Image 1 (spheres, rainbow, N blue to C red):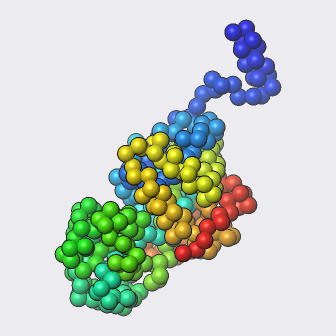
Image 2: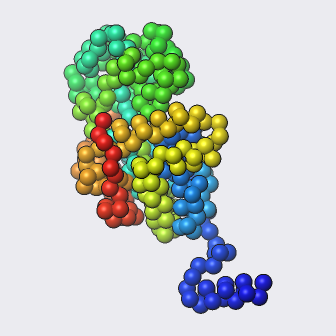
Image 3: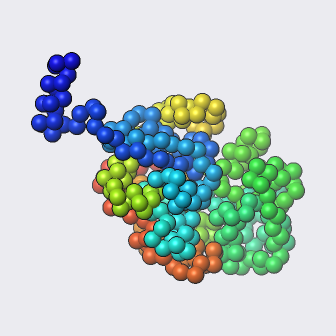
Length: 341
């Protein structure tokens, strides 16, 4: 006891942080139920990277990537994983209140229309005369009018069927709808769970390939945390950066951390979902310049204009209201080595 007290006193004199230093509590919400694509946050939690930054982070499952924003704006959470396009929507309606993205993880959007391959549909114009189904309020559904305008689709000829998220893939498989508005990183694996081969059995009309060059999910923080404790924000970003770089080289540690957080997940399915996120959502060519976590402001400005049009927003927020890259480590520490698919 005597030696421990002396060591603590010496540590304080020398400027070291004693083991009993006060931690900053952070409540963090995921975008959905536990998934492989959440690995950066779960690795940072499991391996103590948040704790190393003086952060006591509690992670809860989510209710949708757009719901992350409402959870944070409501004050229940300090940070979370969610869609930058929902930030744009809320920043337009309630400037100064919406969360701010501080680590842009998915620099390619998971928005696509899936159709059975035997329908022989290969381009957007062929969607005319069909019935498409999807959940209300999702980006893929909400942004379809912009997608249609950019690709010459007469929206009056396209019927829409509102579906609960859990019915979307089963109805597509049964032929009850001709196509589905999907969030690819979810639908791809829902189809696998329904014993379908998403690559062989379906054609994917990705919004990104047809004029919708959008960003998507990343880590965001509340305005309150940003203003009151920027050191905590910097710590969050450092921990998530470290974990992100680690999982690109070692998916085993990612799966270990995912299972440690939620032992009910299908470990191999979530390993495959993580690989999907790494190779299809986190690998935009611009990362060769920006590094993971960053973005190109001019591209973000174009994205904001598309969202303002698609959501019918009254005001166009500035890019600086949506993203703050000042907490990111140097680009040299954020360079991914992930093949483009």
